Structure formats: C-alpha cells, structure tokens
Length: 70
Image (tube, rainbow, N blue to C red; front, side, top):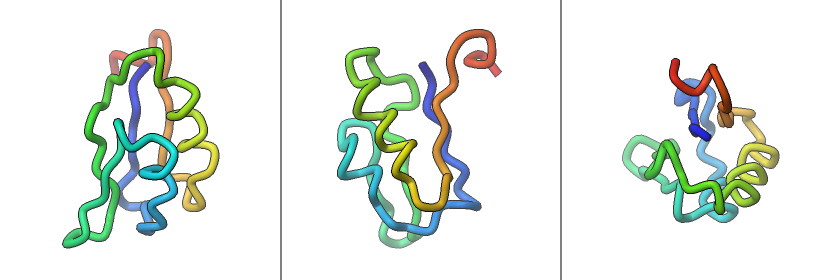
C-alpha cells in the first residue's frame, strides 16, 4: 500500500490528520498535507482508507498492486 497526496488539490481541511495521524500531518506554512509515511503498515489500512474517503478535496489516493511501484 502506498499513499499519494495531490498537493495541488489539497485545500487544507485536515480531515486526514484526524483519521490517520500516524500517516498524515499538516504544514501550516504551506497550508497543505504532509504524508509522514508514504508506505504505512497494512494494519493502518482502515484509517488511511477513511482519510482518503473523507478528504473533501479528493486529494488523497491509496495505490495497491502493480501501480504501487510507479
């Protein structure tokens, strides 16, 4: 599992930091998300999936399988 953030889409809502604080942080100066762990442990999948699902700007994605290496 790999986490991808589109920083051009990020609007700074910070929903992801609430859902998966082990994976996401917020850079106040840049007003956008920071991916702390782009390849989080599989045990964090539910939290990361919720962060992706609830992102109002749809700026986050979870990549699995063959696409993961791109």
